[in-house]
Image (tube, rainbow, N blue to C red; front, side):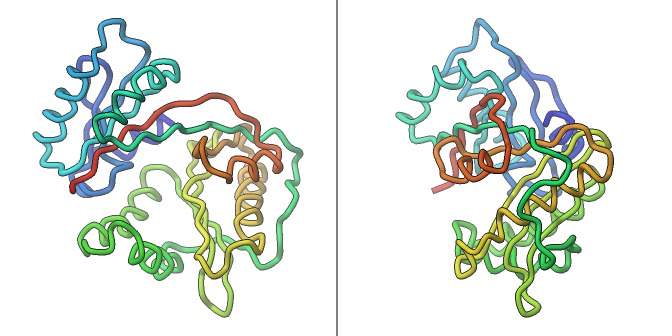
Length: 247
């Protein structure tokens, strides 16, 4: 994950408790602009951490604040203070694929997609989400796919119904390890097995390409982690993401 994050950043700049990872081309894409706390710094203090993140993001011209804490124990200990201060707290579960060579659930209507084939689906999904009122943020969230292809070997898998992309998943690769990310199904097409089939096809592509480790990240407080467990993804550990967005 650090390889992926570092590859997509313009600058990886050390600071007191880790590194900052910012991308000047896509300042509104949170996944490309955050402060990472590495290890378990013994002198870390909540107020000082928030003040440092505010200064670092502010200097970069960001409206949001995003702190990723890699150590699960440290993240859990700080979570109540973040919640109490109005931050969004996400507990993220890393899950590794432990199944066989041919994952179950692949279907003939699932295939690899081009970024252009994803554009309409991403636009439709974003138009009904929190970014709906900001066309520039939507533009950046869609345009970032080209960066993911260049920097992280991104591929995209999905399902199409009557010429419309209705489900997709991203695939990032360093040549040996694959991360499956951003699994999304449009609302009218949920509960039809598309998500499971798209993830299975991404796993198949990774194994067929000689990758020896496949993983994904799931919200530890949401139901998809149970679906992934049934697909032979095994929990490995947790980390925390703390986000404060402009009001």
